[in-house]
Amino acid sequence: MASGVTNYLWNNFIINFLLRGVTFQSATTKPYTTIYVALFTATPSDSAAGTEVTAGQWTNYARQPITVGTGVFAAGSGGSTSNSNLIDFGTSSGGTGAACTQWGVMDAVTSGNLLFWGDLTTPQTVSSGNPASFAIGALVLAGT
Image (cartoon, rainbow, N blue to C red):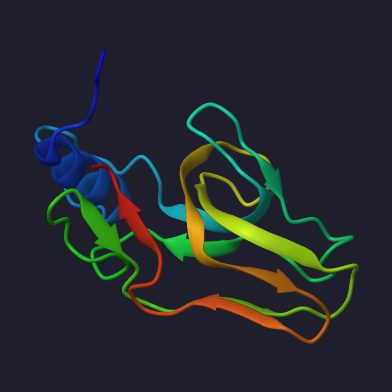
């Protein structure tokens, strides 16, 4: 049995309403004003959060806040969008090192719910002195 999300729903509700803050149908408020990008060392899924990077692995690691608005993600097209601005985690200042393999978009700065996730194009071990970021267009959210 197959299932999926139409491009209409993905583009107009998920991308434009949830991520870009554009009104959908009769909705009058955005469900989020800020979302957070996280890095993972074990694979999240549609029903499990995976294993997020810890302070023991990356001393100054923190989820990166994204203020929801029309300039933050590109307009939805073909069921996908990407970041319109650099997402910068900074440079690791210590820890044992984190073998980052996936990213996730969370609804809170700590704990919270995983909203989207995906594999990194190139997994990367971040250790002391290494920077980590997503260039413009590098974080792609796709529903199809």
